[in-house]
Image (cartoon, rainbow over all chains, first blue to last red; front, side, top):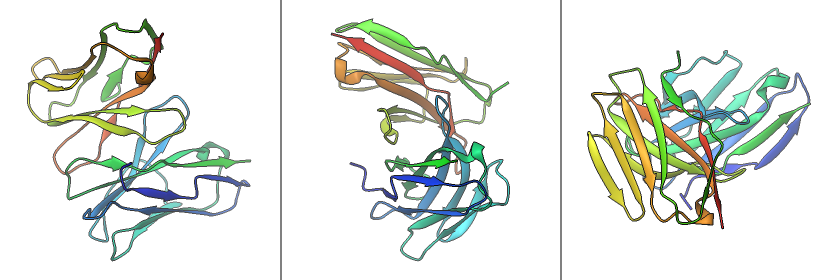
Length: 111
Length: 110
């Protein structure tokens, strides 16, 4: 186990709804990154937070937003859900830009 | 062209075989190279992490990096059924995001 925990593990939402996913980083880590993994694909970078500031963003629309809290836990918010948002959402934590350790993921299904 | 190319497989080998998994990349600025193992419906697990050309060994696993050819490999010796998983290569420029390959689905047959 990596010490990175994500909640919930599974989620079903309706198109157009909003969703919040949560990540608790490993103790001692100050950097959290979020990735989207479609079935049969490698993870795609959404954005990264370093010491509560956004520190890089991938090619995702503004309806994907995030937050990092003073305890370095993080949230991923997705507004106006689309069917193509169905995927495994992965959170990874690290100390600065050292090795990244992943949580078990949240599987989101949009119907 | 994708920054990181990985043969998606699937790859099926008998127990005890030596497995070779490979990735090529186009961005010469990549300096850190990783291999992750991902079991079905789980998050990726870090197997190997290296930042220099050459070989790094950890038990039955050997990671090889050839920066001049922009090519990395993971070798698994004495493969076991428990090694059956998807293997992801990942790499990054210093202080930037991880860029992943597509993943190779590996099955080890008893």
